[in-house]
Image (cartoon, rainbow, N blue to C red; front, side, top):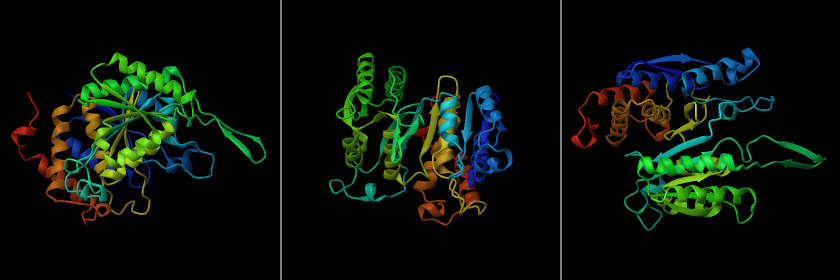
Length: 358
């Protein structure tokens, strides 16, 4: 499909290492990308006095697509979260977190027999968290009323609630999920969450082929560990989505393997959702799986579906055949060994069932 120009934000800690591994794998898959590298995060703050220089946002606006490694925010120094700032400044209103089991990664949840904590149907988790990114409790509007009493303002608008619910129903239709679970706390927060729920119901009426399920957030947390696949696509407000997406990641092995994207009308940023792991930075021990899966989402976004499937197949095969496994998942492989294993398997012919249709 020709050469693509993509903004690359390596980030902090292990970020540059996992980004380099993903760049190498994407190139080996046959995708031509010109990476426009931009620096952001805690390391940049020491040099520039800001964690997010203006040119980073300008690059993403220009290229419309970015891949971002983990970014740290200096604690207690007055800096805004880079992740939140990117989402808000670029109006990346939809946080998209597909959560799927990888073969060969056992968790206490998936390993237990069905009926005793295991997944009905054999243990494979497949659900998606769609989180509203721009408002809710994350607007940053806080103040002290009197000494010892502080207040945070929760903003919920019809505009933002409508577009995130539409995004979720559209995604369910496109990806073949049977239902959207609208998660709320409208039994208590009747005005704010009530408005969100109303917008979910309106979106459901516009998508009659998709079942809508209404679920209070605490019940959703319980159901997520009982039978997550029943939830299918979860759409919810910012704070609830932040918590539930990490809970969902725990069902399949943790934040080190799940992908993430923040999508808006004019730009999309695909990112590692785990931390920068400074304790292992520079040691060649980092697991690039999460960012690689995010890169697969990015390739689908830019129309490189054949190469996306090639990487996806190789990644699953590496885990299923236990050819390489980094220390976070109980193995001893280095980042280099893991990368080489993926590249090696991409050169193998896929079984007929996994070949991309012409």
